[in-house]
Length: 251
Image 1 (cartoon, rainbow, N blue to C red):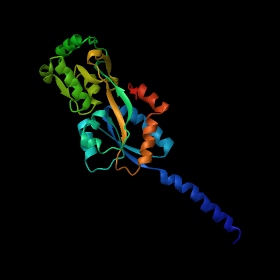
Image 2 (image 1 turned 90 degrees about the vertical axis):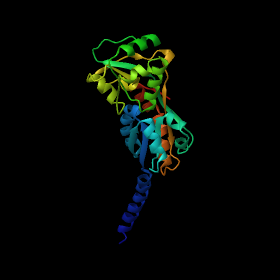
Image 3 (image 1 turned 90 degrees about the horizontal axis):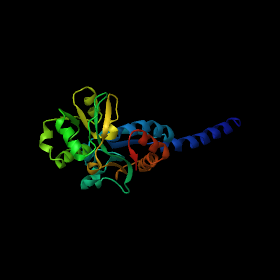
Image 4 (image 1 turned 45 degrees about the vertical axis):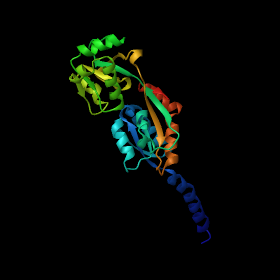
């Protein structure tokens, strides 16, 4: 009997060491903008491996993200276009602070091998858009809304309506161009860096604007510490290197 006592004690001590680490593992539900899917999908495995936490990421457009945030469905944090925080009801669902994660500007893509049009000035971009037979973009998103506003600023908003081939997700924009279903893709440049297409260039400076992706923890998250750890990770050198590699600017 005496021989078994140290063994039992060692077992109890071993459990005491193991159980806390198991208790710290969290399953995080993340809401994210569709255009930041490239970096987040690549960083997901690294964060899970290093932290022990598990991530479920739901990517969507800004209008749908606002609906998700303001519904009763639970979530732990958002990595979303800053436009989400411009909605008062959505902003109230997040705890302070908000942390900037990545930003990216707008550009135009053509099918791989096609001649690249001139978009170096507002007038050149206008002429390119007017001559194009069809344009793939995602109107029902923050980025798409800005693209439409540029059309309006150029005085061709009405003319572009008949040419727009609306896509359901950011990833479908370059796919439509690669397949020949649309002559041009007009959206965030990181989305337009994809197989089968080539970036013709970025919007001219007079029309350029960066879409900012911001992170914050949900007010009702039961895993706030783990959510904060993810945000800290997204600001780390390892994460910012991936963000840069995916065509976005950190912070």
